[in-house]
Every structure is written in C-alpha cells, then in structure tokens.
Image 1 (cartoon, rainbow, N blue to C red):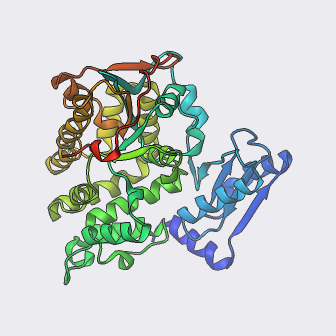
Image 2 (cartoon, rainbow, N blue to C red):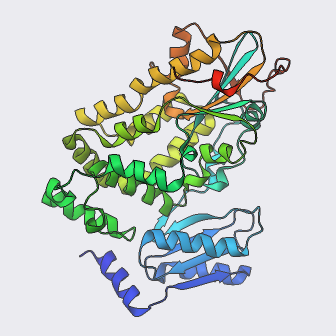
Image 3 (cartoon, one colour):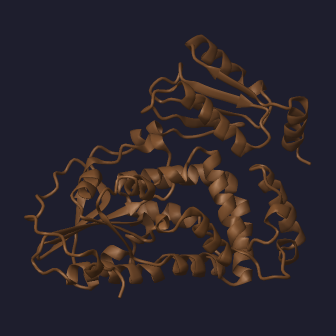
Length: 406
C-alpha cells in the first residue's frame, strides 16, 4: 500500500464525515491556502476566478479524489452568484491550470476551429468540438456563437439526447459488457489488474464493481473520472452547450450511436487490454497534456493540437490502428455526410452548424481536406472576424428531406 493511500485511509477512518470548509472572507481564504499542504487527502480546492480570495470551497479527508473535486466545487458554487462558475485549482498535491491561464496564452490574432462552406444558398459552418470542458473556458469565441445562432440545423456526430437516459445506458451496456462467463479479472494480466485496483480507488471504485465490463469500457471510465476529478465536466462540452440552446433547430447526425459504440467497445480484446494499460500509465500526465491540447484548440494551432491528441493516444501498433479507426476512417464517413448537405443545395437558404471533434478536422485525412477533395472548399474563420451576411431566408425544407446519411 502506498503512503498516499495509507494516509487517505487513516484520514477517512478518523472522520466519518469529511470536513468541508467554505470560506467567504479573504483572510480565512489566504490562511486556508497556507495550511492546504497539512490537510489530509483526498483534498481539493475550488475557487471562483472572479473572486478567488472570497469565493472558494476547500475540502479534505474525502474518501477519494473524485469525491473531493465534487465537494470542493459544490462548496464553492454555494457561495457564488448564479452566473459565476467555479473551478478546481488543486487536487491533493496537484496544481490544475486555470481557464484564465490557458486563455492568457492564446495569441490576439489566430484562426479558429471553424470553417464556412457555401453553395447555392446553403451554408455549412463546420466547428471543431472538445467533448468535455470546464465552465471557466466559456464564453466561446463570438464567431462560433454567431454561426450557431444563424443555423437552422444543428449537426452532431451522434445526438445522445435522442434516447432517454435509461435506454442510452442499456444500449451502452449491450456493447460494453463482456460475454457471459467472462470477467475482467480473468482477461487481465495479474499486474495490470493490481494496477487497475490502485487507480480505481482514486475514484471510489473497485475492480469487482466493473468485473463484467470490457477493458475498453473500464478505460473510458478511468479517463472520464480523471477529467472530472480535474474539474472538467461532460455537461460543459460543446455538444451539451449547443444542445441546451437548440430551440426549434432540427438536430441531425453524421453517424449512428451503434456505430460509435461498436468502434469503442468491440475492438479485439488484446487491443482493449493494451489501451487500458497505456491509459493507466499516462493518467497522471493527463492534466498537462489536456492543457496543451486546449491551448492549441483555442489558438487554432492544427499541428500542436494533433500532436497533443496523439500524445494521449499511444504509439504502439495496436494503438495506432485504433487511432486510425477512431479518426481517419470516420472522417471519410462524416465528410460524405457533410458533402451531401452541400450537394443538395437548390437555391433555398439553409444553414447547418456542424459540430464534430476537433481532431477530425485537420491533418492529411481531416474532414476539411477531404471536403476539398470532393469539390467543396471552405474558408477558415479567424478571431475578431465578422462573419459574412447570411443568404436571404427562404421557408425551411421539411426535416425528413435533410438527412445526413442515406
């Protein structure tokens, strides 16, 4: 047992209820920061970027890292104004880069992960998404918000809100569980199973809880839990942001949920095991890798973004094959779907806001160059730029004529 884990267990045993300090005066907050190192793990500190010395949540003696991050955020948000986001800035001994620090490194003039295509009255805005963010990285660049406001149709890789939550969970489990008679304990090497147990404890889980799960599902659970421990939330991703404001827009899909689940959870078992092992190795390095990727995304730096993305993806032959299936193979499918919107242009005014993972847009086989190969050349939008005026409005076509897939 590591010294860190022993200290954590002793702290939990010493206090049945974790201590929560919600400090609302500058002097108390400063003293809390000074004393932070002496507090028992698992611990976290969350603050409001607007009032970091006044609005903060400090927790310690929590049962695990994820609980600490959640409790710190909740304690901070209880003091904050309704429109005042908090963010985790410390997790145990780890310092977490703030949204303001990332934004401060973005150059004044830079391209965005946003392209505009137009053909015969049809406009497609193609935006690169980050699927999980933290609230302090909002607001988005005005050009992205304006492109969405002008759109009649919101186009996603997959609309996960199309199914009720319980049905979505059941569909995911249908792909993510091992066949009857198999168990995670049986398919993983002993050393990997032991390492998995140590990592899952950081998030309040044990391998027994996931014994029916495929290694790929466990890998995804670890990544999401680690990101949430750092204060990054799925509900703050761009898809959730725009779905919440869909209003009367038609929501279309470039892929199917089954296609995505099949890709994620039906890779060969050896590939899943290797990817899980690599995830455990790099989990502690996710914060600086993610910070670099977010900076590249906000700066519109294609090369740096792809480098950061691939640094998190592994470099073994199996990992490279999975990354190709995850990116390049799907890029061709999604480019075909977007091309159909443009090919169907008939002079009527239609605007599509297409949102896909930013890694899909760039590189030799990115969606943008693939659309150029199909005869559709877009123009990249830059920060500070005024978007071209939209085409004259015409009555909306029926939704059933606007499918992205045949």
